Amino acid sequence: MVSRWQNGDAAIVSLFRTAGVRSEVKVLLPHAAAVYDLRRRELVTTGRGFTTAVVPNRASFFAVLPSKAPAAKLCCRRKPGRVTWLRRR
Image (tube, rainbow, N blue to C red):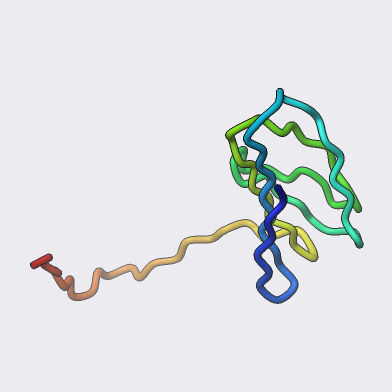
């Protein structure tokens, strides 16, 4: 089963099968894209297709983006601000 969630030019694609044995599949895309394996946290390709293993009862998730994602950058203030504590009721 292939599922796809679209958000603008970006998509999340999942591959899932409940029966059979582990097998290699080739995924073809309609256009070149940067594809990231979300489980392994790595870039798979920047082309029009890729090969991956489909393992029964284990979903694989891929981010399909129009171009490579920039490196994440965390910025924070030098002086800490006011801390607000929240309590669960």
